[in-house]
Length: 330
Image (cartoon, rainbow, N blue to C red):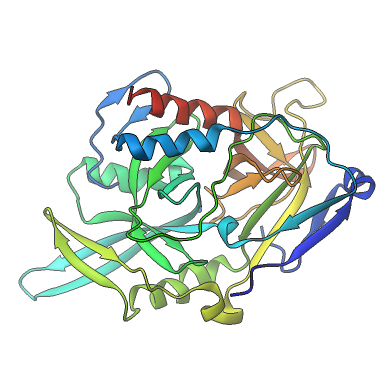
């Protein structure tokens, strides 16, 4: 697999840029969800093992930010590839003896470590969660990683509807070379952000999804009263070829206040001056200098001061949610 391209930007030039487009720039969207505990901000759905929880601490342990010298290197690595989150539904006709899979929607997610934890926007999972709460167990979320070629059902662990973020997990049956993604501890030194996405969301929602679901390596089984789809031999991005490509952007961090002093976003949100499209929701925004995760894309195509922007829930809310989740296991 091609490990990705490298973009080198000098420190002086990078500090002046208002936004740099990468090659193929983006054209800029559970299961058995039983709510066990609700506090003012977060909804706890499911707990994990203590061993798994310990790995989350590594996600929060980050060094203090410092301005780099010389050249900024942006590497599009396998571990940074956004996962595609599909909302699907099994349609089982007992009388005819047929089983189909219906497509409802899609978004993005970011895999945090090799334990299978991931972050996404709550609204990407919202309809599936609601259907499961109503007893419609055919609905499920599938996390498809095109870098390593696995597509697995997603479990919701905790979320904030208000702040539009969700922590989930996929059960990885074998080890993948997945690097731990750290959650940022502060704003970027140079007030720039970097994001990855897939160029063609229509292809992601159409031909790619059909290829994935019809792949010969898929396994569909019936467990605990529900149908389950799993595929650990799914097509990878280099096997798919030129039909799917990574894009992205470098952009300024926008002002949280308008010229009149009115808020452009909620206190837990930040703004990147760049355009996003349906399908980008749930993907990550990162600090290009230290490669830490700054936030999760939640809104798109909002206009602030006559500029298209991407709004994301920032690292403070994400760190708070993960810390809350860890605290429930003490």
